[in-house]
Amino acid sequence: MNIKIHRGLDQIGGCITEISTETSRVFIDFGQNLPGNGEPTTPEEDEALVTRIFAQNKKQHEAVFYTHGHEDHVGLFEYIPEDVPQYMSEGTKGLLEIKYDVLYEGADLKVNELLENECDSQEYSDALNRLISADNKCKLLNKIEVWQRTSPRKDPESICIGDIKVTPFFNCHSIYDSHMFLIEADGKRIWHMGDYREHGYMGKGLIPTLKKYATDIDVLITEGTMLKREDKCIHEHIASYKMQNVMKAFKYVFVLATATDMERLASIKQASTDAAKPLCIWSLFMKKTMAYFTERESKQSKGLFSFEPLFYNDRLLKKLKQTGMTMVVGTSQMERVKGLLDKLPQEETLLIYSSWDGYYKDPEQVKADPKYKEFRDMFPNVVDIHTSGHADRHTIEKVIKIVQPKEVICIHKEADAEL
Image (cartoon, rainbow, N blue to C red; front, side):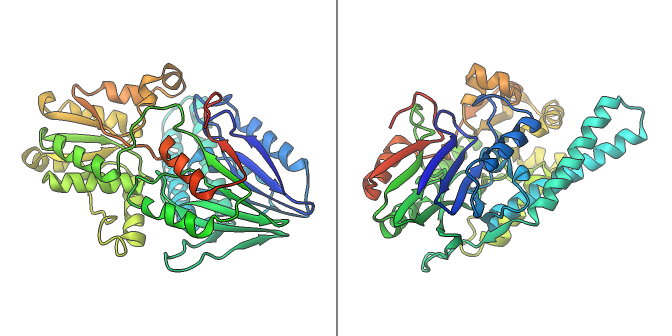
């Protein structure tokens, strides 16, 4: 087998890994560059990159596998040639279907609104392009093949692409239904970790899985996101406990978090329950992802991943002024949140910032995407309570010692980060 890292050795995200034999090849992830990581690209440049990669080293049997649904891993899926099958977990596909359906609905409403009013032609053109893009992605997702997450007591099923065998294994990351892969061909065994961590609610299976299946590994491909960061990776339940304590000190609590991270949402929900506050949301996307998580995971998690939030509207405000609230929000709700803040007493209002602090501390990140800092700056009272979706140095070291590969390749890392 040959391994070629097209992108990811010297940047976080935008990952593209190619593994090939004489007759076959598979790709692990085709991701977009993250803001502030790698050179910014246009859609045309992204499409040209994918076309160029597939024109080289052409094989009889080809396929693309995705570790999870973050854009820096799956963002270029729409440019993959039509004759190349794409595979992702059933949970990842369902999550992306929700995402692009919501984007389509929002773009459709915007286009109709602009048609009814006199509008700038460029604004209408941009809205129409967003609508077309979301529609195309929805249609393309229908063609993607899926595997189902294997229950803990069963061995996962493999997928064969020519003479390459790919076996997916569930792992814990800051998005729903992430996976790692065992790739076998030519008598060699490669283990691709994807993005992973041990300190999430579902991270307890990482080490047992590696001990059972990651044996006689020739090459271990691991992420190294945290290698240069000093972040302390506390467990999700510790993050929840910290949130609970500050929720008790403020009547109106906003939490900035992502709609696709089921485990963080569970931490927030549990903290809000313990602090005796109703849990509210203000995003259709979050409403749909919470319903999706509840449907798929509530029973086997004994209710940890069961969500019944209130969907906020102005009629609720009178009641919430009596009870207080926890409101889970994203940066896309900035204008609506700003309007609500004007109706609440500042001294009783708090933002729990539950995202990576580099989004508002790192000047390069702020320049690339200023929304996080702008959102944070709206609040008079702010506390950071977060834990990473990625493995810290200690966990990476533990993984290498358990797997004992002949070689290690570190991707998804900063250029000067070292194992």
